[in-house]
Amino acid sequence: MSQAAPSVSWKHWLEDRLSAAVLGAGRLLPYRQRIATMGWIGSNVIAPLAGYRQRIRDNLALVAPDLPAAELRHLCRAVPDNMARAIAETFSGDEFIAHARHSQIGGEGWAELQAARDAKRPVVLVTAHLGNYDAARVVLREAGCNIAAFYMPMRNPAFNARYEAAMARIASPIFPRDRAGLARLLKHLRQGGMIGLVVDHYMDHGELIDFMGQPARTSLSPAELALKHDALLLPGYSIRQPDGLSFDIRLEAPVPHSDPLTMTRALNASVEAVVRAHMDQWMWTHRRWKKNQRD
Image (tube, rainbow, N blue to C red; front, side, top):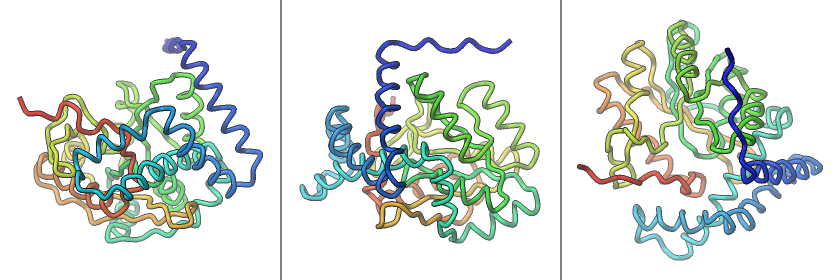
């Protein structure tokens, strides 16, 4: 029996209709102009109304209190610009795919990933909310890497339905972060497939592990899955380039198998390094450090 569709509140319905109207209007523009315009709207309209700038300031005050005022102002504008660009790109479907497929790909882990693909060895590919990870999904799909994406559903069920459809158009399969989705993800991995996980979420029951100089609750699951299934544990990132439209896909060296805590610390260190190198591309609106006190 299929699950009943979640009820949609009037607030969620209105948010969904407004977002659909903005994204629909954007599709009237040529691709390059559309992405730039959506970025401007995200930075100058949505971010102030949604309180994103204050959340960015609060997070940066915690982990980068000595940041110069000019850089703080820049990040309060650049971060929501990147977030809005990423959403607009995902909803651009075939146009985004046509653009993203030309992205550069490289790094120490690229040869390792290709070897795992050819040997049908399971792979746990981990990334962060930086740049636009959907660009990597495009490039890796075309390279024959059948990566199943495991994603956190949006709180707004109406918007989430359209978001799922947009992600599926870019690359499949995609599995929601719920019991049924997890079962399908594990089956994919056991069959020698590749899975993609975003590892910079706050996880309520996660371990407190250092991230950007502060303890952050972090899931050990990516490392545990890699150990259980003898999978390659590989960090990779889609870094937006200065033109605001193209990407550099960087695959880092695999994390050596040891124990879940040690491996997860290595993943956090990897994410931290790429965030520090590209501060304006990470989603500083996350409540990454809530409940960060040890009992």
